[in-house]
Image (cartoon, rainbow, N blue to C red; front, side, top):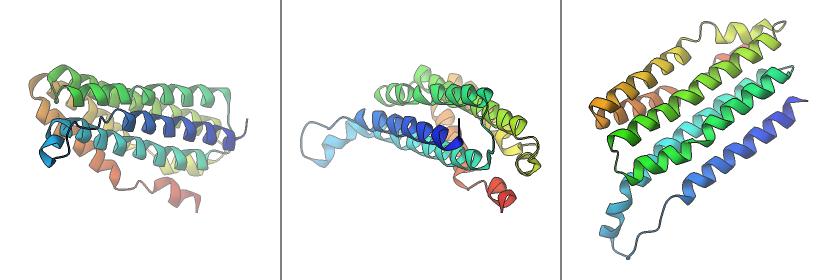
Length: 190
């Protein structure tokens, strides 16, 4: 399989994930500004999740752009990532509908941790399969940003049991960390 087909499939799945999330936003009853207040938690959770999906899409794009050879291991690792990302709309909706209650916030953290692990696995498979192209492996290096992200997710999950608002702040911090583009792969491929 060529990487263009893998990229196209992944882009389609990610587009569906975003569509499902936006369809979860319910139109409030009434036409006054005050009628928007009951839906603000759902909207905030949607914004956060949209940012995370956009971050994954952007980094996935760069990672696949650097990929020269697609193997069965890469295909399965990619499906693994897409599976966990596909559960994000559920966690997003539950957290928003329940106004950032403890259990939904903890589950949301888990829903962020699992695709982060899956992305790490996909990245490792791509580096392994494209080993002769050391530019990608050198660009990723020790992947301190990726490993730090895993630790931040775990911290957010733990904080969710103690203080859901602090856990949400940790999730926002994690998104902010990745909003600064990771240009390692771009630089290596120039």
